[in-house]
Length: 239
Image: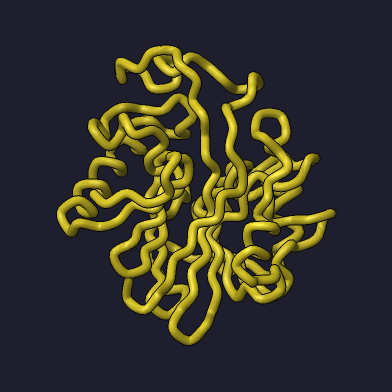
């Protein structure tokens, strides 16, 4: 893993709330999925380099009043998950937001202030450009002074790289650490591993997302990479 230790943190587990829930066949058209319960796991990841630098990938669903509260099982337990592995929020050096959807970024702010006070926050320029409404006002504005905006590929800590993977959102990014790929919402459901062309209702650009998914999964599969997913029941999966 190129000297980087990757630890999964389970922020929450639960079904998608009624505010946005649809039958699975509607959320993943053409998948052949039946209307059965879809229980989501909300994973974040802690990366520790050989030198002890700490990077957090995504910040979860946030507190009871977060933007995710209308549909996700708030409050998230990220702070407790970090405490369980001996890490305080102030010790985090870098936060990577794969994208600004509420289940990935709401935990970046607590009581209107940055939850990770000493961290720079890595975001793709395309994601920042597209930010509006609650995502901008409640999540981006409070961390404005700590933003580290990148375009495309960048090394954001020793052995830790981000890569633009657009479609789910304009500036969606994945994170690589050795043979581990933290994929954000590149892949939402296992059916998309079997057929990357299966689209997802809530992708901003379904065609671009399917194209990106096929390209990225093809490359990861060719190198035998390990997926670290956001919403599968098991955080790690070797392709």
